[in-house]
Length: 474
Image 1: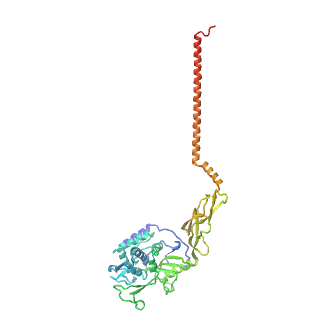
Image 2 (image 1 turned 90 degrees about the vertical axis):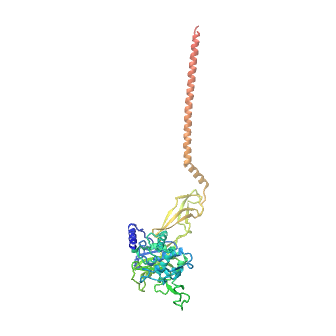
Image 3 (image 1 turned 135 degrees about the vertical axis):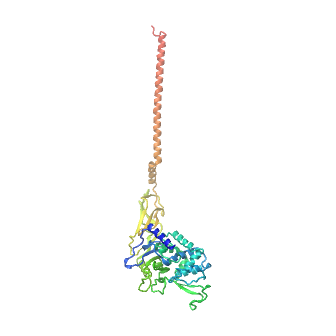
């Protein structure tokens, strides 16, 4: 069945063109990245800062659990009051395979939903993810996979498919995503305070249960069964790869996926970023003995913070364009200001050539103009990606000259369709009147001619009668 699923999605990818888009700034080659895919976005502005093969589908290992966590948070209202007894059927391959990470939740152990959340996000407990799928899927893990894929589609993921809740299945089995899609899923999770609380924790003390009844470390915490720790070593102060600005989120690794890491970072400027790193070599380590995902993530953040910052791309106090004004005897133009501040991730060296401004404003406007009146818009594009459109407003009042306005009204009336129609109708009326005049005049001439003819005939008749009566004798 898995091979059929894998074949289907491989065929789908073969016939579906992947989006060809590259956003953000160019990653310097001197960083020597081994990661196959990278994607970084600023969570404050939404700007894509840099990327590398962000839309290429890959195996994502335990980063799958980020979607599992999202569905748990969104579908279980009371994390502390909701419990489940771990069903024995989830304890099968690959969950029980050698090397599969576990949070030591045992068959038939009753745990809360909050415990499951910590157990799968900190030590990457695969059994915790499988139990979550059983819980949220209402006893059907297959139903949960359908929920995962439906939610991914809602979030705008275009190259993602899930066939498991833990990530132990790889792309050949039909479980895959992209760096861009994983960023979308993580951003959805980041909206929930409980998610931030969980993934930014470096440890969690598991509560007593029906299967864990005694404290494993009574000297450290006699009120908890045992401690679980995060695998995101880059956020652990005791780790040689520690970066103080990192806040979570999740590691993932299989031989097929390589080493993968999703993190967020809050720098000393108060800026928040999210980064996805996929496909670092599985066996390679840095000079401290840690997976390259940590060193490469740290190097990318350090380069970013040294060279870029969120800065005002538009300032409401600074004019950025002007437009000609008609019907005013005082000024010929009015300056335009952005209606709101727009911030973007921009180089700190002042080279803002990647920021392009496109205006949509009229050639001129008629007075009166009111300060703050919207005249047009401006669209900002950063590295080829539209980052926003802002209204442009007048920076001052401009009064209208009454005489110029009268002349304009007169001119407008003379040039208006209404006037032209009236003019045509008037011409037609006059033409008809003139035609009627000519016709009446002609008819009158006919009547006069007829009267003259009748009078002549009458005269002739009278003459004949007179002659017939001898009127012509002496």
